[in-house]
Image (cartoon, rainbow, N blue to C red; front, side):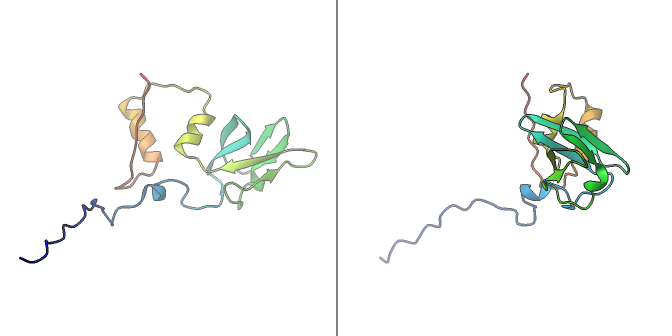
Length: 136
């Protein structure tokens, strides 16, 4: 009798052709352009959303922020207020978590038409993982 054959360790099946979940999140372009949806971080527990437009502006208690100052900047780069302003904001790429935090109303019944629109805006591809978590 010879030595006992080695038993291979169990291998977890992996699909190498599928994208990782990280590739399904974030903007295709890391710089801000006109027409982009941006989550504006103004401070702890204070976020809003806006679409970058020509001649658009965002105002808060710390100053005025012209949308033209956003264009060409990277998501996450600090932007200072225009003349006379004393503050700054940080434009962030929209993620499901940030989008939820920036909304004024936290709950909503979702119908099939709503879900279809949301999924189309998420730019999901085969292999992306979607987790739905309800509280009711």
